[in-house]
Structures are given as C-alpha cells and as structure tokens.
Image 1 (cartoon, rainbow, N blue to C red):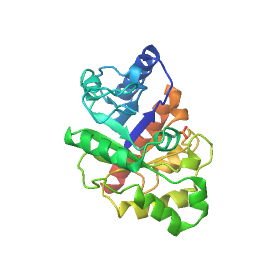
Image 2: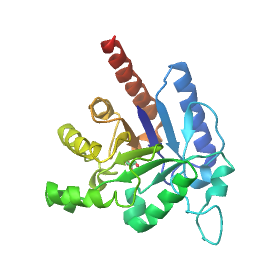
Image 3: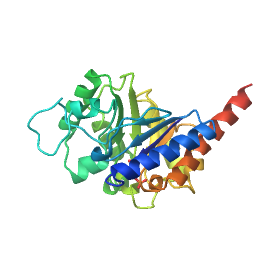
Image 4: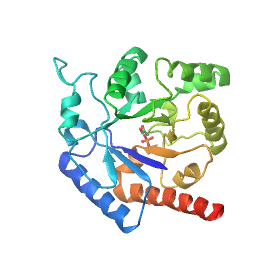
Amino acid sequence: MIIAANLKTNLTRKQTSEYVDELEDFLNKNKISQEILVFPAPSSLNTHSGKVTIGTQNAYAAANGAFTGEIGQDHLDEFCVKTILIGHSERRHVLGETQEELVKKFNYYKEQGFKIVYCIGEPLEVREAGNETMMKYISAQYEGIDTDYKNLIIAYEPVWAIGTGLTPTLQEIETIHKELKKKSSAPLLYGGSVKITNANDVLALKSVDGILVGSAALNVKNFCSMCEYAQNIENKKIKENI
Ligand code: 13P
C-alpha cells in the first residue's frame, strides 16, 4: 500500500528533517515495507535516502527560467526528488491552476520519468448535484492525462472532505473508487480528513490502495500508526492467501 503525507505549508526544513528521521526510525524498527511518501513544503526539501520517499507538492513545468515564486526541475534534481504531486485541490481552487496548466505540468514531469501523484475530486455543490454530474466533473479532470503512465498514482480527494473533518461513508468511497478503477489501473489513494480514527477502516476497503493524509499527518506519531495499520492489513492478506 501507499501511505502519503502532504505537509502543505507546514514544518520548516529543520522540523521536516526531524519528522522524516523519526518516521524512518519507526519504519525500520517495525519492519514496514509499504511505500511511504512525504511531501514537504518546497523550502523544506532535502536529500534523503531510506524507506521514505520525498516528493514535491509542486514545481513549474521547466528546469529553470523566469517564473517568479516557482521552483523548477533543477531545484528538485539538487535533492534527487523524483516524485511530484499534481492537481491538488488547493492548487486547483485556491491558486487557480487550470486543467490545461496541470496537463502541461503532468507531461513535463512524465517526460522526466517522475512518479506522479495526480489528485482529483469534486466540490460539495457538484456532489450534491447527483452522481451523473459528479462523474462528469471528475472525468474532466482526467482530460489530457495519460492514465496508462507507469509511474502514475491517482488520489481521489473530495474537495469538501479536505480539512473539514467530513468524509464520505466507507460505502461511498468504495463505490466511487470502483468507478475510478475503470478509468485507470494506477494505484488509487483516498484523501480527505483521514484521521487516526478512520484510517484503518479506509485502508481496509478493497478498492483503496493507500491514503493521502494532510492535517493528521502533521503529527508524526499518528502518521507512523497509519503506516503500521497498512502493514498489518497487508500482512493479514498474505496470511489468508497462504
Ligand atoms: P486533510 O487530511 O487535512 O483533510 O487534507 C487532505 C489533503 O489535502 C491531502 O492532500
């Protein structure tokens, strides 16, 4: 399974380094073999080798150039970062990134062989407009995206569930993930108010390949526990198949 922490605009470089060290230590001590991704703020990126993969929350679709305020591929290469989050709802809705811009970014980092965690998800008014409208909205977020890209991970994050404490029911997550699995065979993560109290149940769903966690992941001990839940679920599956 894939357990990912999006640290957003939190934790300085020093705090991030302490966070990653504690996480790495936990993963080693507890023999956790799941795929663990951490997305620090751009100024907290650093080289890291170990079980944790460091990814960037954003980067411009260029190696360098005149793009004030952005970082480019050169800044990622400096720290051997080869994983990027694209299409997060905060970039779509707060920073106004369009599907066209996201596709440009996707294609650029795909060309460079990056692992891409591509986020999709609907706002509340779209969900309330019914299933057909919701699927149409989500389908538009796949436009221009190579869903067969071998280093692709998709994260379904309903906008209304992000940072609100609200989540779809487990049944609703299962239903929509089953629909989304028809669009791409890439691993599919769920994100949006995943907490220590619901992570185990979400991870246990058949159509969920992992989780993308925001605020609850800021507490490294909580995030470690979530990694452990995923490991226990995988261990159980292996035992049952023997
Ligand atoms: P929260 O876990 O804080 O709802 O954020 C989810 C998210 O945006 C992860 O990318």
